Length: 228
Image (cartoon, rainbow, N blue to C red; front, side, top):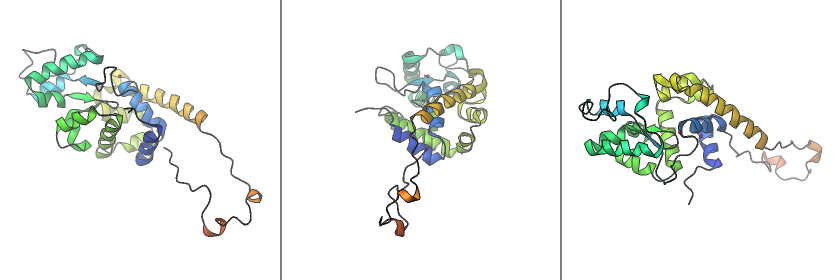
């Protein structure tokens, strides 16, 4: 069974948040390069040393400077699957803090956000992050709605969204610029892929069509619109 999101998942989320499908896909692409899992089946992660330091009151800064510090330091990342080496080292010191100090899955939601995203414990959150991208999507939706970030996605104010979602250092990584470019790419794809359906002329509708007099229609209008 596939762990990936379906097109319908994207459409349902876009409809829920009142945004375009291209917007959701753009965020996913920038956060995880569009795929929530590594090739070995484990969810994509990024271990944040400055968060682990904060979670453990910086008591491991001197003994484990590669996984615990006061300020964000890009040089500490190993990247890719090797981030699990850093996570496992931290787990040996403080499992709960380690899981909370890691961003998970397709939308890279931090473990310490588990409660606002809908999970009682960080362990249950992580367990579900191992299941499939639909769980990653649930975490994303929970985070967005709790922090009321839909408005920035609706208006496509990428800098404001990136600052709230990725933190004040978003500009260093050009998250806002990357999201805007990804959005434009997916927007063009959706325009190409979406068929244009001409509205039938009134004369083309059979006069004996029973739905005409009851406010119904053959097209029931239930369709919804709406990617490390």
